[in-house]
Image 1 (cartoon, one colour):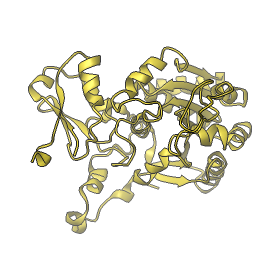
Image 2 (image 1 turned 135 degrees about the horizontal axis):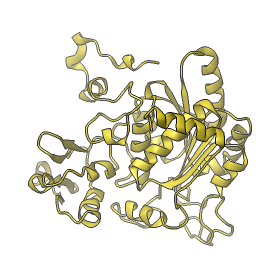
Image 3 (image 1 turned 90 degrees about the vertical axis):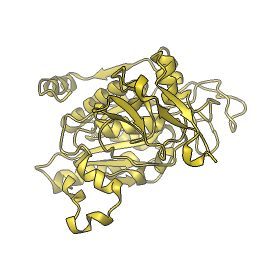
Length: 286
Length: 75
């Protein structure tokens, strides 16, 4: 794939929607130094979508898509969840897998791309919710780590099955009550970031999306390490403001509060991953 | 109909922070005009969450953005 696929025939330009013209003229393709500081000026790779007003997941998607170092050669694999509502509006290759098998699908895509395009860098990024990553898809997620697949897995943790009405998930905090979990969660939140480390991930981070620049740094590190070393895992707290009873302008404050406790910034990297990150920093790409 | 964000240009242009453009959850909704030195809202894209007002008023202690009923819906 090349970003030239968005090049519009000049004779047809007057009939093309403005958003598509903008993708050609104002989007940040072909620049590995792209980042969240382009957001105030450039055309983003995500269009209008139907996530709720004030949804932190929506902000997370903005930051992630702005941070991809190589968007024209990035394939995103996603799974069922609120994020499914966004992927049809993204100007990248996306694959919607069955619920839970996103890491297996991504592994296959990555291997085939390495055979088909041996001289090109192709990044495969999994974006899925906590249900897909940790409950229904835990098997596929961990197996891809065990096999050392060179993919980046990003988990949007909202601590509940939000778009099906509020059932508890493995990442729900112990004791939390939701509309369809009236007795409260009976066991502890699964420490997925720790499982990722124990399963062989070379770069692991846990954070909220309250700091766009930090999200950019983490996503770039995860992708560069996945390219050259092995699996990487990013755990993002993106609370469902509706399910936890907050107003649309409360999401950021909720994340800032969690920054100080169970989602305090945590980063792990192997020595090999650190070498890669230092090399990328020397090239001023981080 | 619902309220949308609107930037108070004179107030916004005193600063160069662009923080609201980063924290707005919607893509290409709150943008920045470098020539005029202020943010602006694409009102037809705004979902009215008021997160930008929280950022400007509560976090930055400024008063450069407010929620208004868009003129097209005023009557």
